[in-house]
Length: 472
Image (cartoon, rainbow, N blue to C red; front, top):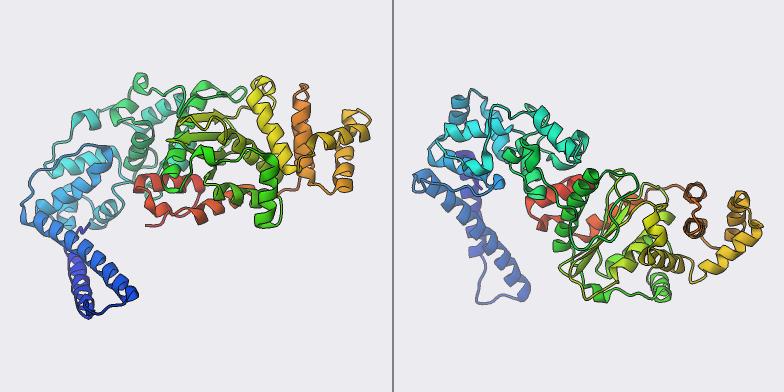
């Protein structure tokens, strides 16, 4: 969108150059490559012409009324209304007692860093009437009130700042809740500014995306679970739209076949090769690293699976185990278009007695240990003479003797002990090399998915979750 006369002159010059370049093509005698080049230039030219026509129409005053239907539409309407009022950015700044550069920054970033009060000041200065049901504001509209209400429903201030506040809203004038944050909250949770002022109106669904099989991480408050799973499900849904997901009936459920396929395709059996294999199946893998609530999930959205890995361990072997665990869930009940499994704690009662959880972990062990997990566990127990305090050394010896990954073996041993009520996960973690599986999974996602295909708001949320720069 063209926002000022300087941009207008630049686009006019560029459009003229493109028109000249297009004129050099002889459309009657073009090979396929030259025809494709001409077509690309024509598309770009038409986009520029549309921008010019829009700006010229606004500047002429032909469009005198504007409708705002959502929080996200308001910033663009403010720009259009300013142009239609024949006001420059400097003129608007003077009306508000601001510097011209401030208005330029606001318009360039969709008013992300402005407070809601400032956005409404701009609307009033332009003579716009804002729909009260969407934008109601009162004397009680303040950062402390909103922050306190958000914290009570499971969205602490740090999380809001790091995950729901756009990059552009660094907070030059508003260090807390700004317009960009309000837009993100509306996008993910459907809350209006008026809702944020009334704790009774900040309602969260008890679950998001299908029939949740396992709800609570041990000792995690419901409010934290509900808020975070709503956020995570939103990200999973957004990713599924652009990741080329495939239907759940294409997910194999034979562990031996999967092990063989990974090794044949990538020459080794580890987290990196397993991750690439899962992506090849058409199952996107989203890594998150926020602490607590849950450590893994599998969502099926409109028949397409998305795996979320959120393990705090820095062991790739553990991430590989969890990845295969979630892949088993992805292949379950393929006839269901919507399905969700949220993983509770490793030592929780729900996981120890659930057939689906036990089967998923057996499956993961079969893949990582090439169909020999039970045999190897028996060898470890025999080596330790049945004494749990000797088990670490036993796992080391069996791993070396059998040439199997010590991380994969220790994870499976921990799983088997958990079925007997023994929590050996800490010992298993201590046996494993440390690396950076989160970054491995993040980099694979960024390589596989064109995030620019997402709407700007969704792209911003995913980039914040992945801690990567957002492409404009």
